[in-house]
Length: 111
Image 1 (cartoon, one colour):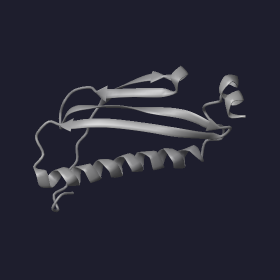
Image 2 (cartoon, rainbow, N blue to C red):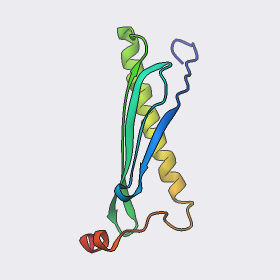
Image 3 (tube, rainbow, N blue to C red):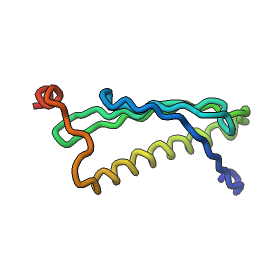
């Protein structure tokens, strides 16, 4: 909320999965509260049972934000990104088997 006013918006994105690259790219399906939004999730194997997750997101609201609101919006976006990554981290502990097995080529590099 901003000054006690609840703020929410919903956005629908197209997602393109590229499993050989361990990447999912997304972009906004249609403008609404956001004029532009796109980004990606990328998994980078870093050990036998370790993966670094890269998350990139860029967005532009459909209307100019007043300067006092810009810093608030920046903090909200940072908190949202951190929350998404933490949710992914917590969910990974409940997976019985890791969904992604390292290829032999990557395993050799990490040995």
